[in-house]
Length: 197
Image 1: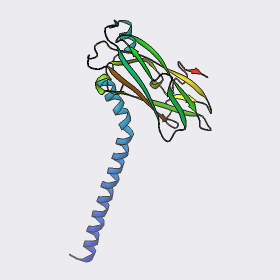
Image 2: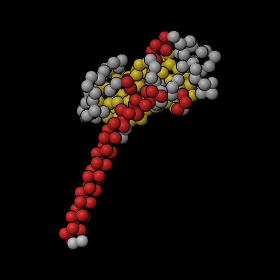
Image 3: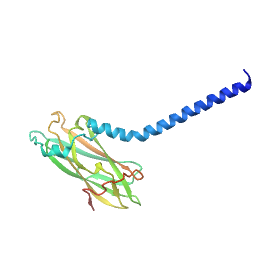
Image 4: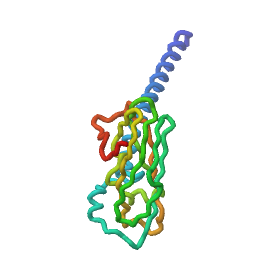
């Protein structure tokens, strides 16, 4: 084998490896791009992370209140570090009976110097309780647009399914607020249910 043939073999191997690596990078980019929609679909189907597949508002209308039990619901908020917002529940806790519908509000204020589109992502703990906490109205269902310096109280209407196991006495509903500017959906319902202050 001559030096020229060796160099041609090495060049071919390098080209092949470059194509394989470029394909891997493209695959990883595509997978990361599709990860959020796939995650949302899976969560909706299994009722994980506060996203249920059934119609909570229809269920709430047919629900009987179980006055023999009381469940404490705590509310928590987190603002992603890349976002300059004030975000807090107006009530830290509520006590309620399974089957009872409650309306609570979360205060949000845009502290940035410009308008921002935000998205709140819910989380329910313990994980076993997620499928029993049903939201009928929530600011987390759509992106929210806040003008520079805007303040608003944003609603969450929810109930706890009476089928919740007796051993679950406390539930935490938390929201993490993310900057969705640049990821705006085509027709978000920016203002639904909000009380602007």
